[in-house]
Amino acid sequence: MALKMSLFPLVSSILEASVENENIVTLPKIYMLPIGLVVFFVLLVLVYSFFKQRTTFKHKNSLILEYEEKIKFLRQTHAEYEYKQTEKNHTNEKKFLEFEHTITTLEEKINDGTKNQVVAKLEEYKNKRDQQRKRVNLG
Image (cartoon, rainbow, N blue to C red; front, side, top):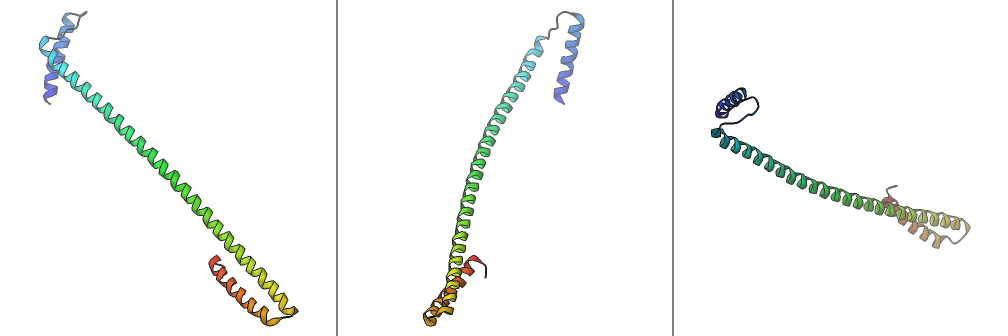
C-alpha cells in the first residue's frame, strides 16, 4: 500500500515533466535515490533467484544421475539373479532326467535278470528322483 502511495506522485511528476518538455523526460532529484534502491533490490532478487534455481537444478540433476545409476545396478543384479535361477533350474531338470533314465534302464534290467541288486538300485534312484522332483517342484 505504501509502495502504491509513493509511486503515484512519482508517476504524476514524470507525466508532468514529459508534458512540459516533450523531448526530454527527467526525474526530480528527490526520486532518484528511491528508484535506484528499488531497481537495485529488484536486480538483487533476480540474481538471487537465478542462482537459487541454478543450484536446485544442479542438485536435482545429480539426484537424477544417482537414481539412474541405482536403477542400472538393480537391473543388472536382477538379471544376474534370474540367470542363476534359470541355471539352477536347468541343472535340477538335468539331474531329474538322468535319474529318470537310469530308472528306466534298471527296470529293463529287472526284466532281464539279477533282481536283488537291481531292485536295491532301483529303489535308491527312485528316492533320489523323488527328492529331485521336490526340488524342481514337479511332484
